[in-house]
Length: 277
Image (tube, helix red, strand yellow):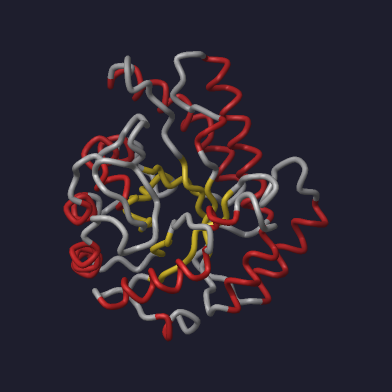
């Protein structure tokens, strides 16, 4: 069975990561996807003493199935510009260092960004992304970190078919899939069918709510994402990795609790079982 955890996106501007995981642990959670986003969690400004304190806190609260996520606003692994790709690879290497210092084994990796007006051809974006991932892989392996490539609407591989083809082309356990159900639903894809298509590569699932007219990561129950179908697909494929609630809300803890209760009502683990998982 999957475990339900929390992506810390909602805390990016307000709460340091160490305080955030303690608050979420008080709610019973022990699985986290830490968002790399200052002031919540920085890179070079987050010194070794701070890293040791956060690692110790994660160990103290019994954190399991943790992941890390570098948002795509400030990098582009599939840029047309070689110097931008190189700078993005360097930024990801810094993030790999951080994940390694915190004993986090998976880094969610957005596969570049495409212009919605004049996107690059699939051949070009695939070539640029392959170059970037091939530059990252040896460094990630050396640091005990694996890459989970995510479906994002404006990215190189927004749907299950193109994302699966890219990831499978590596034939490596160090490159897999993070599948975002809201992102899939927004572009008109069935999240349940996407999960089934990616069963062999799926390592992380993201859930939040959205409609198909406005892209959101809202509390569960406020949009049109078919969560019962998603729960059924996750059970069918025997997925045991983390499902991260990536919910952005002004009152994140209330949104997390209400969202979890709705998810539990359609087949996801209940809140009473989170700590034990």
